[in-house]
Image (cartoon, rainbow, N blue to C red):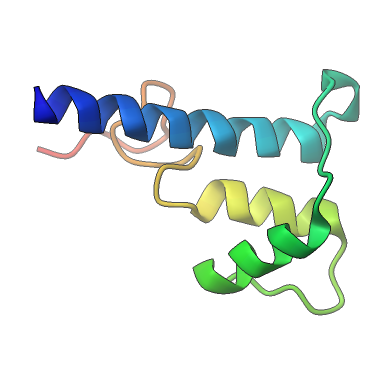
Length: 84
């Protein structure tokens, strides 16, 4: 039960990262970035550079670098193979 709950929780994180990527790359998707200050704060926590960069660039890097993000290992559409 605990493992299933943790897996479901990480799925939510991946969904958020995917929505952030959609907001950055496809404005017509209906998603948008409303709190740029929060995005910059999260970017700094993840070690993503924010100075002299557009919001779109920061958002893409945050979505890709986040622990549950769009490039997280084990994700169904990940470019990385699942961990053994």
